[in-house]
Image (tube, rainbow over all chains, first blue to last red; front, side, top):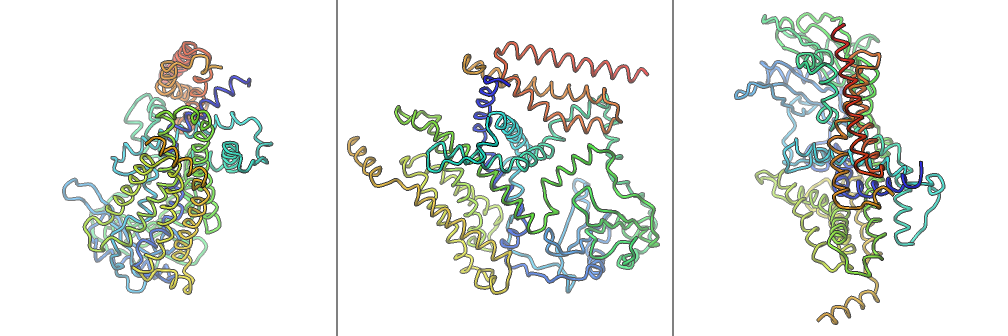
Length: 523
Length: 98
């Protein structure tokens, strides 16, 4: 590896990094928040009652009764008997034929584990799920376009990381170097420290993101070509990878009481470990009840299958992945999602995501800082000004916009039409305002004022929450509800950090004086 | 240095296009070659190939931007695509004739 190779990799790192860094920042922020999607959901629908842990076997009975009532003719039922972090309420789901298209559409509802009746409708909100979905679909775009944009940005991120490793000459030595308050040097050191210390996570999240977004959409050539472009064979793959289909007998037979199939024997499904119960063709002689057990992501978990009319155990192997590469791919995707993570690991995921976010932000800021002295002497060009504006309006502005998203959840009238969509409109309107501010405001004031706005939004959020709901700190702290309290406390912390940074970055007196005198001179 | 000495706008545009479109095709044809060359069942092969395509593509992008002359890079991509694609096709023909 010679010097010129490293130099061209440094060049490539700069440009692959810069060109879509604001989109990547958006993906990282919304994706990182996605690790707390359920918690944000709970905060954003404060009317939904918190449910105590309940007996999963009794929940199966409640679910079966509810489904017999609302979806007797459905082809497939789902019962989620266990309450967990990912699913705070027990629930049911069913497939229903769309009369227009004839396609099966999934319907689901959460149930009260006491009465077995659906939980009261909460306010219309996108919740944490919407933020999470934005990290791969964006918003206001057709899904396909969103996917492609994110996929392309992810590929640039992947190249950016590999070239970054090559560009970085003294990885080990620099890891222990931090030059504080030394202008662009400090930004570079921060960028290096964040990148190197979380490198395995960032590589994993980027590569698995590629598998997610690109695997099927962008790389069909390998699969098609591997089967000689024989479409029948490619379609046949679904049979290998998919679950075996159940044949309907078209002969009515009552469904057994599913709870009776659950026992505590070691070779049968145990109540507290059942993730999901699937019932194919309920009420048919060939109906089938399968239990999907709790496991680590897609690669774990065991299945048990029973005939739904007789209750007889069927000898069916669970979903076996065909080979090591498929296992590797699904393990990567499981690692990306982290649905298996308990509280400690979840916070670690969140922290690693934040550090990735900060890696992107410090890189973008370093680009401006390292060119500042050169451009300050001459007049800053359009490209430089653009990067400078985008940086402030994205790095601080996006967080402000997400704060406004939360605020609008509390402030928009509850009966409003398209309320959930308006929450998103509020978010993007606030973001647009940040861009306008960064573009028209005098350069010296942009960063500090953006940070003040950020601080104001997050500091006011717990106050507005207390004024509009019962889910505020005054109730959540004494009740020990760490999900609701945690949200408000994180908002306060975000606000305080932003305020401190804003005060630190405000133009100093002499600078201000210079600015004013320059203005006078211009006039 | 590769880029600086020929930092024309057209040169960079050319390298970018070369890395994205032919580079993408090359990464796929390399993977396809492996699918036919490696001794594993077809399903395993295509999944492994898909997993490797991203690594190949990233390496190709980096290679395109590290070569001194744009022409050399273009020629290299062309030759590698023809070779790997041709070899993959030859193996495929051999396989179905067997």
